[in-house]
Length: 362
Image: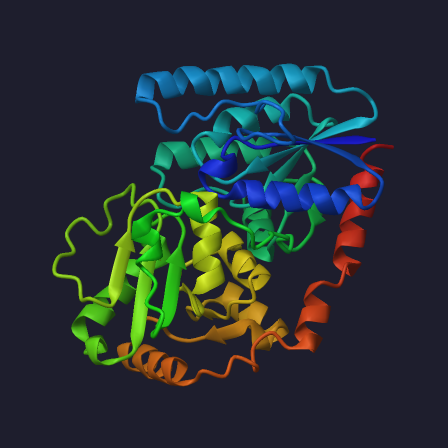
């Protein structure tokens, strides 16, 4: 039996960590896995081109080429083969979603996000219609996605698995880490990192505004915001204080590993979220997470309380008090205790997931 993992985003936005880890876990069950994405794997040329760095016309041409490749691959899928395609609620997913509907017995939808909430009404309607028509089995990672699918009348078979626990090594090439990234770390300070694509729903602008309005310069803390600001969220923010570093661009893999290996805490001040790859990265690097007080994070930290803490990141006093407490506490032993780690890496839920996937071959 062969599983083919299709994904158009790949290493443009860190989804290759998910694909690599998922493939590694699936192979432990004596299943063959072939990753078809936009990055080199084992020296083989990538299956899909990178489409994000072109002008709109070229991007559309290459996107149509990707859709054609996906269609041909689905058409040629044999009896003992199965396609799992990643859906992130991004506009580039629409073609994948529509093609998948034609191959309901061959293609499983791995739905990370139902639809991006920032899209216009017309685009949302296309997503909703496609999911309503789809009879493909659907992999979900949160109950919120299941509720949204049921709400629109989707009747597909639902396969649940928690977001895979990343397995990323700590090795990085220091020569590929830009000096700007290296200099963002203050060795004598407590370093807090926000990492990922910067959009309004991730709440980081509000958090930085709190820092600007309060006297954080006198604290021994350092805040790093790293990621592509494609929406220009920080374009109007001037006169940043010295303990806030903005690295507003794509962060390569070596720079990501450097940052996660070096900082003390990871900040996730999201306003809404159904799952978080950045959180999984933090857990992989044993970095405690400071998250906003929303339902998804509350559930995570009720289960693994030593992995971090939920606070009201929109409350200046509560946030400030926590930062003071964290920066004064050099003892990290209370984080990532053995009990929580054992529960986190328990394979029970993944065993169930694999059995569900195997049944699709029969």
